Image 1 (cartoon, rainbow, N blue to C red):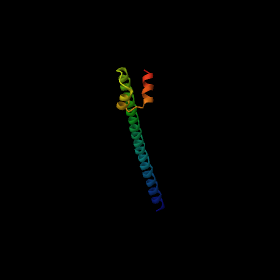
Image 2 (tube, rainbow, N blue to C red):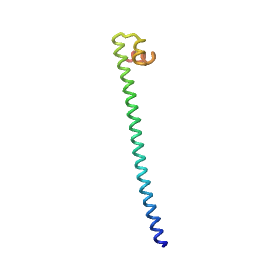
Image 3 (cartoon, rainbow, N blue to C red):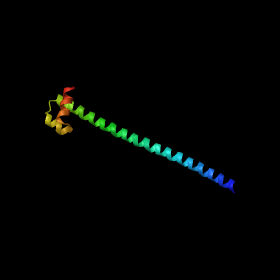
Length: 87
């Protein structure tokens, strides 16, 4: 009887190890997906900002007033001035 219990316990432990390993894999997959989503959002945010900068440069080249540039891009006067000075 003791030998059967020992084998049953070993089997249970083995199943638990497998389950734990699979759980960790799934956890890792979720972690990777979350990080991919974060990176995607960060990339989109950077892209939108770069687009605003490009629009600001083009508007400045067309002699559009600072107030209109601020309203259209949502950038601050300080940001716009910095962009214009770096052209």
